[in-house]
Image 1 (cartoon, rainbow, N blue to C red):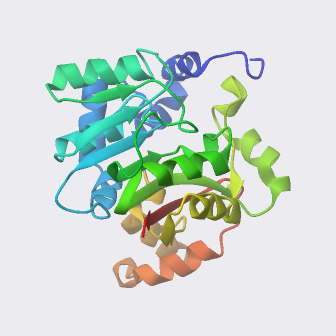
Image 2: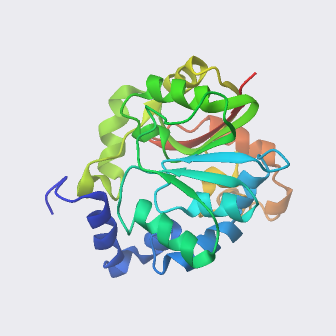
Image 3: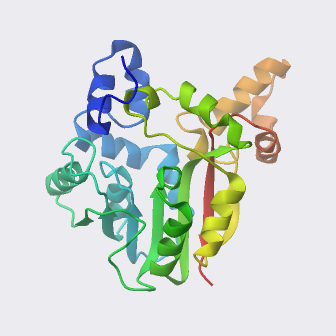
Length: 270
């Protein structure tokens, strides 16, 4: 199959039809029907870990690059007043899908079909700005960081999950070659850790936590910390995986240098 010949919607539909890719389809929540996939995301360890990072009580939340709406739905189900930002109109992977699933679930949502580099909202408007697998798709990362910080209210919480990180710029082609969907639609990207942090600081966002690939269920999913500990224990022939402490996973995650490894950023606006 020729590289870049498909749209994002076409790439997802093609992936759904491949019998050997069904585990990937399910772990990415690309499976149909969407109303069942969003419920599964809401129950899965990834969202439980994200929920623990959110402030209380709920208020206005912006879900940037909302895709088919799995995070928007989870936020709304937890009581947040959600605005979903998604430029793709697709009924499979974009704004059309969000509209349909929220109608089916009977939940309210505002949908804005635009890009994050120019947000149609007033300053200091949202209590939470949430991005899932979004920053690495930025057309202009510093500008995106400025806009995300502009609309976040002082004291508000910023969360960007599952962002692809490079150790060296030269590793980008390696990451793209290994990514299962890049060859289909050509839209995958990754940045250096310092580029993410610089962009967020440029928006006035103070990053309080950088969760590395092994530090959270968010980055590990569909694997879990327990599953990772079992793998490590088998490799070391250690009979008690439950005794491996979480901080050991975090230390191990700091040593990873895989092209495109996943990080999560949590911050606030002073």
